[in-house]
Length: 119
Image (cartoon, one colour):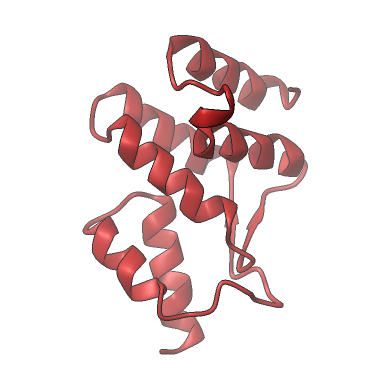
């Protein structure tokens, strides 16, 4: 597999497009480690995922798996100047067992953090 395909898969996973489980399976053939950030997660990417969740298009489990995928990747970065805010939001979504229960309060907190770029 080449870098272009790897980038394409990451973009599709970030956008929660098409057959996400298949994309995750395919990208697992690549190492997690990377010296280059091929894709940057943006505020609008996060807003799109929250919109899909709020519309019932993706479940809590799917959102958790999505966030866990992103949290572990070295070939992805986060949009400046929201780098730390986005990184923390991904941490919250990927770790409901650490007290970040995915409920209306957390969604509201995330939406406010995205608006203000403050945690």
